[in-house]
Amino acid sequence: MWQTYPRRLSIFGGIELPINVADDGTQGPVADDLSETTLAFLGLPSGALHQAGAVERLDVNYQANRDFFLPDPLPISNAVELWRYVTPIDIAVVRDRDAAGTPHVVVECNCPWEPEHGLQLVFREGTTLTRLSQYDGHLRDSE
Image (cartoon, rainbow, N blue to C red; front, side, top):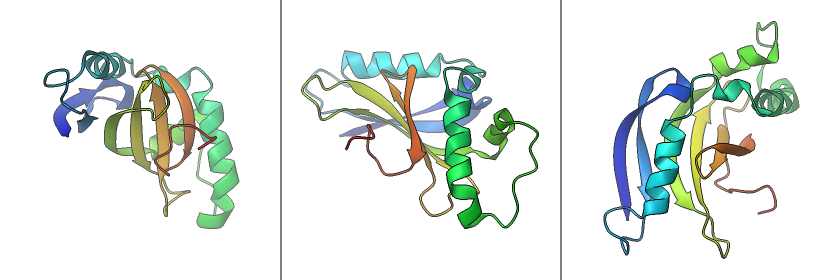
């Protein structure tokens, strides 16, 4: 069962997007850990994507894909500016299929260097960016 909550997202400059929470409904309207994960993600500040290796991961993704889809490099002076070209379009809070069932926030984005698959950001427990890749729905690189 999915519960949808439209919210403003500081991490993406205050845009409003629906957050879709996948819940089995056995612990009330939304399980506590999924609620905590959602609130943690909503609490991320606007500069969070400029920290914790996120810029480096984004730049690696851009460098690996730009020649396939872009006739010319984007007009940027540094990798931080790549975030201007990333547009979040969908957010889901889901449980990992591992034994712990750790909740994750998955953000699906559009970007010009990966028009076919888009970009995926995965935040473990809503706060730690653990994956930045083309969108494939997986929570880990090993899946």
